[in-house]
Each structure stands twice: as structure tokens, then as C-alpha cells.
Amino acid sequence: MKALVCSVCGYVHLQDVAPEKCPICGAPSTAFNLKENALKTKEDVVTIGESEKKHLPSITIDTKNCCGPQACQEIRAKIGEITHPMTPEHSILKIVFYADKNFIGYTSLTPSLNPISVLCVTNLENKKISVVAHCNIHGSWISEI
Image (cartoon, rainbow, N blue to C red; front, top):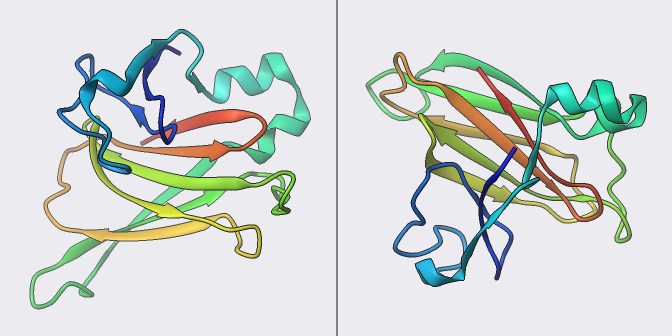
């Protein structure tokens, strides 16, 4: 799947036009390049193989009251149907969240952490949620609900 990718930090932008600046590292729009195979999807698991199942984000959304008096949605992303290694040589570097292709947050990971992230937000009704996991060896993988 093609997408715009920040050449500085690897952030994958899901819209057709580069942002003014990268929401992760602040690089200007000129740092974004269109890459043909920027994102792998669940369809790629079928063609690539069983071991790649450790890269796809699994997404769940629950309504909570963690953001104050109004209800919010807790988006939980767990990377991999099969446990992904988290070593200095091979790990998930970041998990990025989107609502209707708009960036809403991310988590940077270190090899000592499990590849899981939770983001609490409000006003998600009727929006498509996407999560991208960035592996330092196997690239970026996307799941959507």
C-alpha cells in the first residue's frame, strides 16, 4: 500500500497531501516522500507467511470515563497475533493512531517494553480507526476498524 513517509523519522502519513510538518519529529512537508510499499496489510500476511502475523496491530475500542466527566474511547493496540520480539536487533519502534486518516497520537517503544499501546480520546463516533506498527526490520503494518 503506498503512502507518504517522513524521511527523518519514518512516520507514515495516511492522507494524499503531506502535512505542513511531521507530527512526530517536526520535519517540514518537503521531508515526505511517496513510497509504493510503505504499508503492509492483513492481505500481505497471506502472501508473505505465518511469521509476519507478529506485525499486524490488533485494535479494540472501549468506552471509558478516564478523560474527565465526559465519556471517552480507549483505543488499545496490541501488536501481533504471534508475540513480536522486542530486542535491540528486532523490535517495534512506535505505534501510531489515526481517526479517519488523521494523526491522533503515538507511542514510542524501547526493546524492554511489550508492543502494546493505549490511547484515550473523545469524539470518535463513526470514525475509522487505523493503527500502524513500525518494525525496525519488517517495515510498517496497518490495521483498521
